[in-house]
Length: 210
Image 1: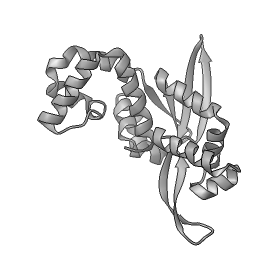
Image 2 (image 1 turned 90 degrees about the horizontal axis):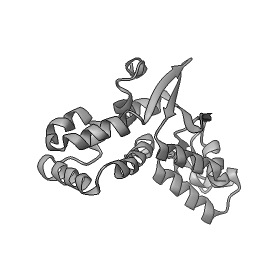
Image 3 (image 1 turned 180 degrees about the vertical axis):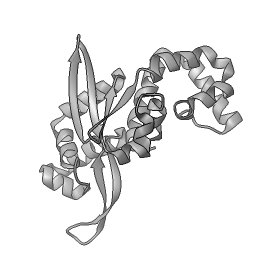
Image 4 (image 1 turned 135 degrees about the vertical axis):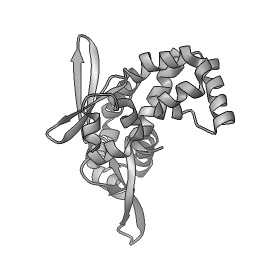
């Protein structure tokens, strides 16, 4: 699980842990693994199918649908650009904390339009190696930055290149509610099964995928 899917999944899981009893979550996870060979992430990827496999957890699944999945993200297309409106509180807070960190923001700004190798990123951002590697690895772990390929370094070696999954960020405050809007590429949208699963019933989602 990489990039946008990791970013969304971690936030959905944190939200679920607040909305659903922890024992019920463990019971669902064990049922999926032992009887169906599925991971817990499939609850989000294949929600309709999970209704049949986890029918005895009907109340919990209803809460997941009403309180988590329907209030996570919506997708809009504007002049060929794809924007995700983030409504999940945990994801919004993570985005705000990440962009408030000057070092992480520098890395994301540097890799918005072009993938760069880790050494090149540190050079462009003028960051010390220790703190720079730590921040970049955290961005990768959270899902803000993804590997895209290989490039040759100054020493003639091959290094992995990384790019931000967020091209542009807008913060909107409506009646004391903070909403984050993030611009992503069509490639990111099409490669993210979780984004499509969460928005497949939204207006325009089908058109974006074609």
